Amino acid sequence: MTFTLATWNINSVRLREGLVTQLMASESPDVLCLQECKSPVELIPVEQFRALGYNYMVARGQKGYNGVAIISKLPLEDVGGRDFVLMGHARHVAARLPNGVVIHNCYVPAGGDIPDRVQNLKFGQKLDFLTEMRDWFHGEKPSKSILVGDLNIAPREDDVWNHKALLKIVSHTPIEVEHFGAVMEAGNWVDVTRADIPEGKLFSWWSYRSPDWDAADKGRRLDHIWATPDIVRSAHASRILRPVRGWEQPSDHAPVFATFDL
Image (cartoon, rainbow, N blue to C red):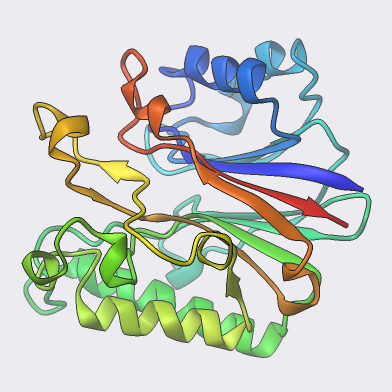
């Protein structure tokens, strides 16, 4: 079974329903994982997606905030969603494909603007969220699994436009990168995108604040696809669809793709 998976922080699935259907029609991923849906599950516009062959969805939602959805042409079995740090946020959902592969869709908190947990409650919540992810995967020992999502951390020097300039900026601070690495290690996760594209600058997010995001290219790779070692060698064709960031009224994120032969 070969399937293509995409992950995309859509920044409101209802506001950008047209962009989701445009991506479905033009790229036709078998599974599309969305973050920051900002919608209760019952208000996600599934009828438009079903018209394009996406007949299955597993999601967790809340009004106007957070929200994660796995939308698929392939049958899905809902295998749960964790409320990390008990914040009451819809930030994780998991589903099983017919071939037994479990997909985790995660939306890690952004962490606010100040990289100090004493001065900034949100930054502390982000670190605690990652710590709980680490502990869960350490106990869970996932296998035949894929983890995707907006993890809100750019871990490598070439995952940001300027490593030195961003060392004190939330999403690239050493303590966040350390926590990110601990989550990966706990689940034996492998970074699929970087396994496929090991060298060079690679971004999936460009700020709305930049008047010309494309020319300035001050991006960060915040969106990730991971796999467990038992299936990672089946992954290929990784790419970030940068042109989507330039679509009309876009999300500030671009979708990330990978194909698996399983």
